[in-house]
Length: 231
Ligand SMILES: [Cu+2]
Image 1: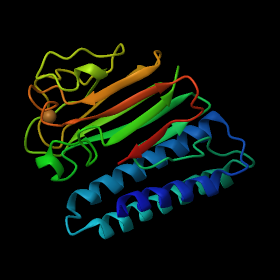
Image 2 (image 1 turned 90 degrees about the horizontal axis):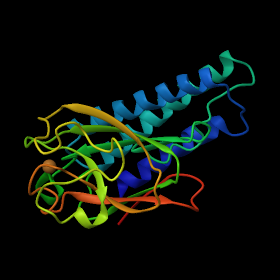
Image 3 (image 1 turned 45 degrees about the vertical axis):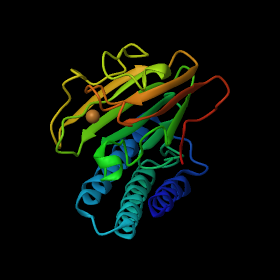
């Protein structure tokens, strides 16, 4: 629960900076980069912060403050302009409304929950990501676990399959998903969420999804912005 509070802190820090701002793309991109860098910093420190959620929370807040300062500096540098990243929903999900795109970070084996068979600490559908139909999803996948993992968005009814997954959208998979990648590897992929419905985020290494390494992905006709919820 502490982690969720930390996310809220990050979101607030960035939202405050951007309130009432009308941005330009260059500035927006720069601020997004800052935000992403801060997110990565949070992840990096999270990796070593095994002593508890408090430490993770403090780190995430610090990263949020860093992103806020960065965005603020850029805002000052270009008078009257600022980022359109006005809602860093958490450090897992950063939206870019003007571009109708969202950055989603998926960390396999984030912690020991479900023996490491989790994304961002959630398994068995306990995390749900919703994006508006037509938005582009940029996924950054990292494996933090000693076992090889991967990430795919597949039709929902595949989440309990042992193997042979098919991407639900063109490009909605890491490369070689049935093999996966080793600890600390990072892979990126992107796809357009062009079909409404419920899907699953799964690990494509045989047996992992069936062991609970899956979460929920939804594409909504009615949602105006992306969101991430957890149980
Ligand atoms: Cu896996």
